[in-house]
Length: 301
Image 1 (cartoon, helix red, strand yellow):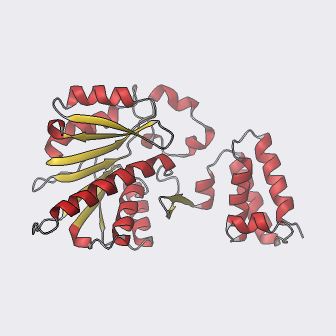
Image 2 (cartoon, one colour):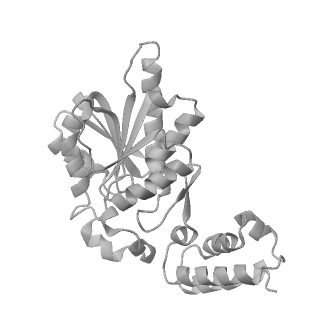
Image 3 (cartoon, one colour):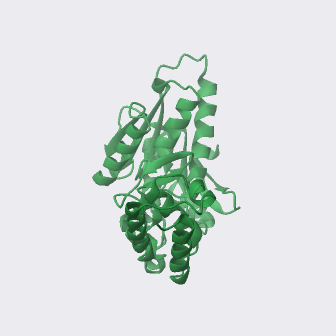
């Protein structure tokens, strides 16, 4: 019977020869998934025998990875902000960079809730995740608020996507994490129509890859929905349309948190100046010091 170490060595050699950047990590994840254990168990128990069924499952997964398919799609899950989300080709795979948006939104939401404390405000704080995809931002926020014991009726979270298929995936993830009562879903292009009220917080991870760069993206990216990546000629076409909707959709003291490409810091500030004159736009950097999130508020606040 083949051991875990032998299969790991085989997988690493195959993926390294194919030019993958993280052949050992990929192989460990795929083998652990095939066996049904944590990755640490595979690493720690190299002499453990692997059953025939698990070995066949691993080899099939390895072949898919060698063909370029993302590990997250093969496993069907992706870890994001401390939770595991179901993922498939209905939506973009959540990236670690997007966790920065979640952190900024959570800080803003908690500050607003603190300011409201004792004010007797009847209406909930309204948060919308535009272009939700797998539901990553909305669900991560909902799970974090639950962990902070924030009552569900104090923050209304809506997840919006133009893709009905992506919304189905997001709903599945919300139910899977027990926050189906904290997140509502709407099939809409960018901000949904809500004439009775405005959003306090807008979060968005919209397409920001330049159309001309799509062909040069890594092979695994070609398995993801192109419409979730292609941001037009300058990468900011979809984001620009969202900016156009903020004056009507965002509350007077609201804030918008938009993920951008690492090379788009100056461009988003310039675009905001054109589309939203008089508004403040600052760019927050991620842990690597790269521009990552544009924060917009009315009136230079």
